[in-house]
Image (tube, rainbow, N blue to C red):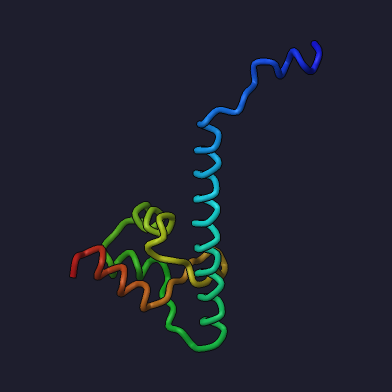
Length: 104
């Protein structure tokens, strides 16, 4: 099959530009999350921040492991540090999450 025959029916539709916009928006969101993470790392190195492990977060907020993963994925709480397969969160983030999640 010749190249021209293969590409004959191919044309850029308005849907492609919409898809490109969606990809760009997703990339910008990832860039914002990365910038937030880098700021968090700088703060941790600059000062002594109280860190809480995932078990404390789950019991303090009153959520399950799956809910913590979902909230983390959606950007409601960010992992401050990982060490020996344990996740640690800043205490201020835990309190903010508890207040927003419980509506206090």
